[in-house]
Length: 330
Image 1 (cartoon, rainbow, N blue to C red):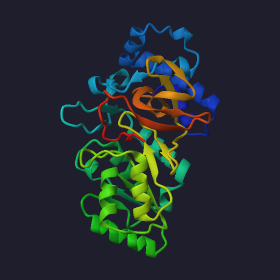
Image 2: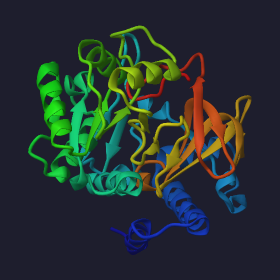
Image 3: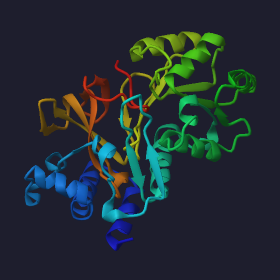
Image 4: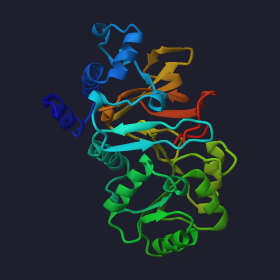
């Protein structure tokens, strides 16, 4: 690893403020322009004058669709793991070539602990049937590590064994133990229709997506069904995608807050090079953990970024592919 990257990662894992984030973003841009030939060519095609890139808003954001058609990785490095998106019939999946899986582990562990504390404080339950039925899911990779870090004897994944999940939650409730149920939307709805549980000690975190299993519904309707079925006040959500190594979390109000290694900006829908700190439009993401692929991505999500850096998601571009780990429209 280059000496400057060692320093970069050391700073990435320490406390973060806006000035430090901006400085690290500029370092990441300089590194990726030199070492990522796909990103370099994209910047050149936009006629970007690198000398004029002095702030995050000046940095070119690359469309996430490039991960469908190109191998986005610096210096043709070997990939330790390749994460792939799920694909519907006729669509091309994204492939994220991750040179160092430990960077991903550190990023998602740091983000989880930022909002929820240590995984060892919870029993972690993963209701992710569609993701477990294929290989290459970054979400399964993350939840699997959270399950290991929790160390709880009842933590685990559930495919079609919903009765076992129900019995396990009942035991956790009877013992007044804290737990987090992380589930894909259609599976949570299936579970809610079969079982009536009052979850006094649990957190429900949906990851979006009906995966073609059920009719798509707006997020507010999904959350209303789940809160009534499980007797909780709020449903939590995770914002992540195959092309990112960092996540954002909503703790029940539909407003997402970014982990320390991530920042969301907004671009004008008819002028993708016009980027703002706040307002309505299409969502751009800075993911400092993505240093070996691309840290600066244009997503297909539409939403609003607020003054404090938090954001909401209102939908997607009409011509955007439905991605397995994407959010539904609100």
